[in-house]
Image 1 (cartoon, rainbow, N blue to C red):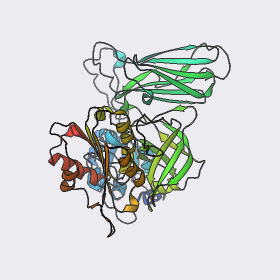
Image 2: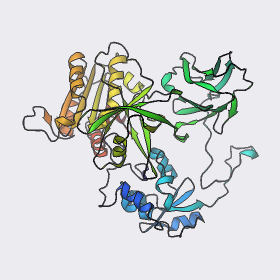
Image 3: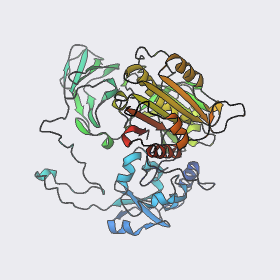
Image 4: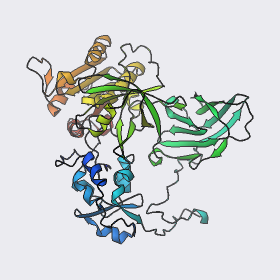
Length: 522
């Protein structure tokens, strides 16, 4: 399934994600599901019209194929004939047409670079873009930096210098008889354990340090084997990160190891490819009649904490095709005592997932057995805790499993943000049976006077005494109110794409600024 950003190919509507400014899912004709597409690609039909030949495509040739009945699109230097995919695209034909006959790489990467289009469109591959020389930018003076356009893509830009001082992290390493310590100097204060992602398997070490919107990567084939358990120490005041490895054998290392291709690089996170590790399913429990809580165990040699408001991607091979979906991790339960920060369970990832009867991906998830493995990506997301830390009132608008990003946000807000006077959750569902963690939310409202929850049902039973309806300007004007004219508010919203789009527009009409509204996206 080819999904790129709202400007070109919007993602399908999902209770757990909503693309800000995106468009709603377009109803597909019968026989045009993802599984139907996979079957078609495996039928042996000539999807390109070239009878299996791969060709070199010039810009002029690409531009000729810009119609619904003849549509080619370039992504990362590879050209695909997406004509047969038109009726299978959840965002509709018009959205695909916005990149017809052009290079759609930038549009694709803005939101959905994680989609494995190579797998989904492999039978639609026409060929490569013709290599075209480009003129080096004026500021490049070194002859060695002059490069040609490779496979239709420009060389990656260097990280811009924000000042005369070099802000690129650096590293060093030292050893004792039993330990290897790698020290990363980020040159940034306020680093924490959420900023470090570490994977070590078969002597291959991958350490990613997140510095604001940038990523610093250490990637080394270690000189000797190390034990599975790894440790991370953070010196927050000076921005130093220590990665501590235990030697398997007490031998003296002459070098740390052989650097891999992306070792010691510093670039924007959005330019860094996603990294996956295999996680074991250790439990699966019912939350409601159609939603389950999955508990995944991280490898012992992995250090990963998903920050508040961020999501991960799950990857499965279904009928020979790689399929990827985003989900926002939650806590194993909703803590009721917010007097002290909750202990981090750094070994597990908990995901609350709705199982759709005809959902290819969620059905495959539900059929996983305890002990099976699934690939989980590193975290992504644009939400910053500072948005909450500077607010006095927090409003959370959630529909269905759009509740998932609100779980950690509630925990953080009520535990660590002392300036918050009010935290209100407005939770939209179809029926009472659909409400996730209702008892826990009601208990929390009784326990903490700052927290209030309002359940709104669109299809209630007759004896429902609560509020009913769907998201509307009148409902929001009733429940989302500043206590004072100068109150600093933050409104977070998550749900199906139409819910989020309408909610954002209603809030704008009610006078809330763009800075005061955060739609969760993936």
